[in-house]
Length: 202
Image (cartoon, helix red, strand yellow):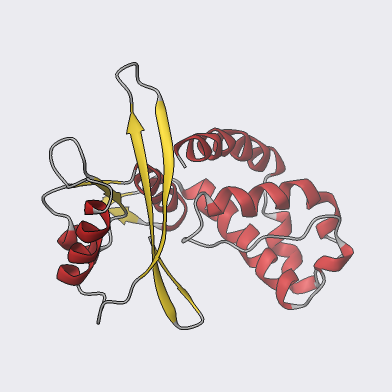
């Protein structure tokens, strides 16, 4: 993973090993200053190969990179890469809430998407008007870059549902009355399983 601190780029490298008896071992190799000229695919590949060689590792049929589906990463490691299961899982959840169709086929989640959109509008309104201080929990905004972002938004909203009416203005009461509380609770109960799976895979 790449991240930026005070204008400097770093590359985070972790090693995960699955033993013969299927136990998973995690090792953080380090966060290394990325001092290569650019983050082009060939440069990233060269940098990662150099870092792996310090540990006597090279990409092959048993040592490979797990990364997200960003085009640059796929280009870097096309011959030794598998997609991150968390990213795949999160993308499916994201489609359920935000996509109208996938591969020219309709996504049949209308009730869930309406609930999601109504909650999202209220959360955005409450956060923008700084009224969340009147609630016992701070409402979460949906972020498609956060794993299971919909769950975090919906789950907190569910916990403060009974108090939300007192902090929104009349223009947003329609959104609140359209929310099926039972469906919201069921959905949160369903999504918590994905949250646990994502936590286990992290």
